[in-house]
Image (tube, rainbow, N blue to C red):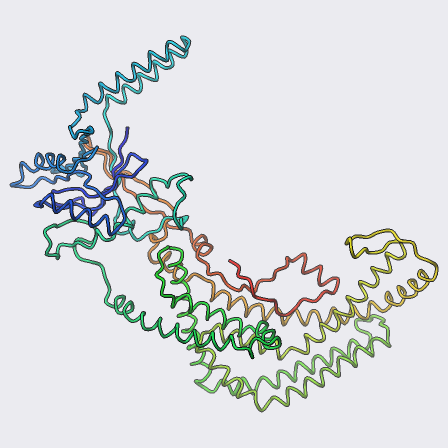
Length: 619
């Protein structure tokens, strides 16, 4: 049998005393958390352990004694051995470090129910008698071959028992283990019906939950002195403590402002259908509601007890601070050298240039584009219809030109709320400035879709079929001569008009896709800033041990006469796993449809809407 003892490296040179830790249930292993130095009063040690157990919720106990030979402490080992009667345990670990050796020796004292020490020889004799009795019972029931196999197995077990109980010391860095989180994360209370947690997970949980035990340092005036990772002084930061104290009134202020904002948003005027519909389509309004939800999460009075909730709040806080910093940098650039006036003076000529290019494109389509012979009547009607819309749009742009600089000046101030607000506002401005292109696309798509579905319906008429709306399938149907004649005429007309409509649809769909691509880049940028786990990525780069995927062991010491010593090192979580695990849920702007569905929609002329409803969160 092998006993594993998880021993903190900070206690390797601790003064002689008592080992405080926990026996891991369901496993033959123990976790050492601290060493209480001699001299001490056993009653005070018991009281201290009970207090720490009540504060941490971890089943702490005195595991045994730790002996480091020093001058003037010749009888210390026997004194610590006798303490096993005061602290009754089924097992008492008596660990000793010899001078000139790196490794430890460990002697295990086993006690019965009455508290008497059971000698190892007595234990071996009892185990041998039990094995022999089981051996006789098996040989009476089994055949000779099975009996020979059982004899060999019993002999091997007896040899292992004669060697005694082995001890393996697993050294670990207490600070890193306490601050690290083993993945995958287990949230909530574990179900007793399921499998119990692994030995490694229980060990990590024990060290992390024993934080009150590490508050006792050598500067305290109490009667007890101990050695642990923080025994030389508590690790703290004045800046962090000031931020903790200042966060309370700040959270109260944010909650009060959010309550006012929620009251304004819930007013009847803003719940009317036109305003609600427009706000659901504008990226700026969606980003505003998204940030409001983030502020509610950060200003919540409930403390984050689970690791996942804490990481989510930390990622949101860091993302918000980076977003605001980038927004202030953008404001500094916009208002430094009067760049807003330059943008306003460039915007109107750019819109005129786009309108002029569209006019030239329509004149080209109204002729013989690429040598194609079009239906001249339909071509002229569609061309003049789109040219009229372009003239309306140019008039609208020139009417708004005196106000464009003011709109940009006040709109640039939205960057103080974050770069994401500025990008969302830019996306909405692009959508408004290219609204005429969207209208052209809708007109062309509707005409093209109408002709495609008309041709498919008439093609089923030729084959004696029809579409059953109720059953959503194609059924057989008999048509009379008049229906077939009218269907043939309509099919011929639609078929010959299709190339002209398809060409207009193709041109304006390509223009619309260019605008959607630009808006998509803006939406992806906003979504990246909102969802990227900056805090988790920073932990992975700077303190990789905080996010642990597992552990690895290497041999630390293997000296004759001492137990085997292993060093436990933390394997950090992969960067891709960190991003996937801690990515903040967002109102993602990624398309719902697959590429195949998108191509199908473009082919049959179904509308690709410039916005989509962002009412569901995706991870």
